[in-house]
Image 1 (cartoon, helix red, strand yellow):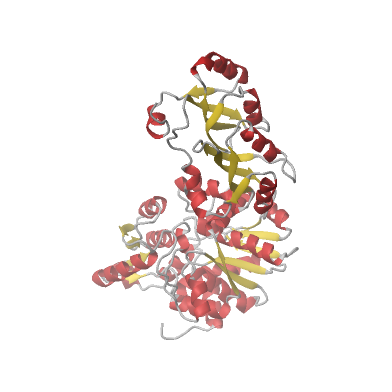
Image 2 (cartoon, helix red, strand yellow):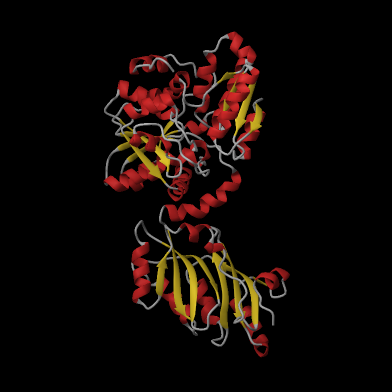
Length: 516
């Protein structure tokens, strides 16, 4: 780009952008539940409701609508992690042009299928946008195609800037800040260009993942910084190197940059769902996560903040991970490794302590244990909290009552892997019987189980995780001598919880039961 456009140039380009042949003016909706919780007004700009479930079709179409007939006849090419690809494919279909789309091999299948459905020709290459872009430039030169950049192009930037134009038209009252996700910088550049030209008092705050923060690092270094690698959870903003023009604009016009982590984004996805019953993709929730962090850090009240929900192309299989991490991200769940004496009654005593924690009733969300030592037992336990910052207090309470405790709430190894790995063979688990129970999800269900047990039966394995249903599925190993089989059956009948005995299951024998 030889000549830098001035703010007044971008204002004119945004006001005259051709986006509404394919895009709609998306709603600006209040997030009532989140606003009430944060004591600030939060407005959601619903770009997730565009035809391709993302804002990207705005910039793509505006760019292609300005191409010559000869350029359209030869066809276009782009590199994209998915959302820009769908925008280009839709624009090409609308304009009757061929579209070749180069996507990283890590792109969610949902986005690949969507591009193909729109008529785009897909080539998978590389692990990130930057890798795909390098290959796309090679194909452009080979086939004489026109490259449609996902962010570093004035027409693309202007197309994305129409979102800011709509926001200021839709909300006439005061706005303290607009929060914008950043990948390569096209969206934040367009939004900032318009807002700073029309309402300069409104802050524009750029948001990035902590593992894909190329723009924040570049602005800090006062030059474009190439990241050696990027995270893939928020694949829509996983860019190693931001654009030249977007860097120039963002450095001049964006007021502040924030980074958020995976757990905060998962919690934000849940917040959006609670208020809208819609599921946005991780990049689409970055702005909401940042608003929550901004309010918590600055203790603001009565402010008005806009979050641009920039995409909803979420792989269904990823929802399992999001649900798992959302409670920890909101710190509605705390995780601990607790050491308790390996003696009769200590398990029950610890469960009673959880029920009597200060601040009101707590639910156990997870409980994993396997007998491994004659003197001590190590338990992986999850507990509901009433707000942020409680995990340290709960851990201190456990310690005061004689239970050595390690707070795992912010431990990535624990959250990603160890919680699933508690178990294995144990030479101490003699006379073990393994049963799958269905526990009712209500207070006292576990204590009822423990109270009904014969004192001489020892729990050698316990695995429970709340899955959000009315009943919790629990795997329990109990050491029951053969002479107690009749009494054990009576215990099961009296307990009344549905169960399946798995002692003879070959999987149990392979991975959990030690040889007799």
